[in-house]
Image (tube, rainbow, N blue to C red):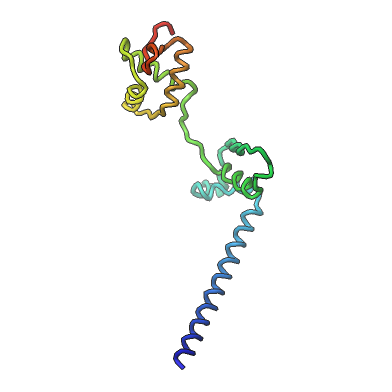
Length: 172
């Protein structure tokens, strides 16, 4: 008798779980269908809700004009999933770009100033990186190497022999 009651209770619990799962799954699929049916422009107009509401007159704030990210290049269009491409466009329209980007050539100018201040002493890339970090600038070694190559092309810095050290050159 107790065993039959226990089996009946377990069956009832499983039926409730199954029903709850089916309802949740149906609600999730409906939300996905609704989001995927919206166009990219409609998504862009819904941004004020993410930014914090509307302005004083009840009109939605217009989002800043941004250039969409270019899609990744693949050798075959068959590799791209249409759903993934659509989600990338939606995310690209919402993503904010960092403000206050440095201008082109800034790395080379900073490194040139560091080499000039250390002149006539020669410096390794690690020393240059430490000097940049002391100024609050974090720069990767390949970026430092690229900037040193630019300075060498302009004759503003030169490599000391076949060593990995660099020196300021007054010629540039």
